[in-house]
Length: 357
Image (cartoon, rainbow, N blue to C red; front, side, top):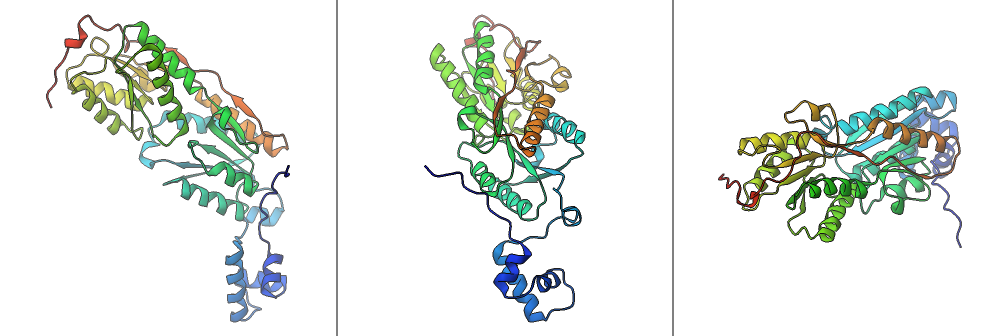
């Protein structure tokens, strides 16, 4: 049995000096663009530094010799979807509450994809820029946990699953499978059999768990017309999918949206087509927020304390920074708050609206 792999070591000026065949002071002069070395030596030192992947550390670390006093947080999602996502705003609020107690900063960056996110982690590690990271949106086939383990960066995975936990990283997870079951139970009890789940990004592990849960519930209950459609979480796609399915020959009687923004956009789209909520169609939002109580009818929604979710994740990261072992922690199951947007299926609904485009 092999032992745990040692974290990768950051290259130092001493490493560069040995490789380039010069003194450490010469390396310092060359990399800091100071006089004292020839242009040939300066070019050789910089070439070796690039080959070794050396990056200058932050000023704070250089001056104090201590940690960066900063936690990193990278999000690989379309930037236009983040500003209207109440879950992320509340999550970051909870994270910041905990970090502020320890006078730690939060370094936040939005990138296009996972490859870019991995590049950010490598750069932060090489530059000593962060002491640890909070990783969100786990994928079904995700290279990030292995990379963070290899780099030796303490990390917490937010929204992972217990069975997918990485031994070297802490995980804070939510039971999406049980949450979907709660929603389907409520809709089924109201008589709904044609249920459509308007989901988020298909590459995300929690999206897949929700899709799988709906599929399992549909098989268990014999719901042949229950299905899911994936989107980018935006109001535009939420509305577009709603229009498309309600114009179909067998419109669903209930819609489950993966966030509050899509649910609100969906209600507006349904109204444009002459569908009344909940008389003709019931609507449930996955994330409860003030937005759910600013529309008519008020939205039934799954409610969870997203601020507490962020606090838990930050507390787990601080524990890792203090030397505690990695562990997996669950957050409470969301509670379904039934409001005005859900109701019983009207008699004879199968013969309801025939909408033309």
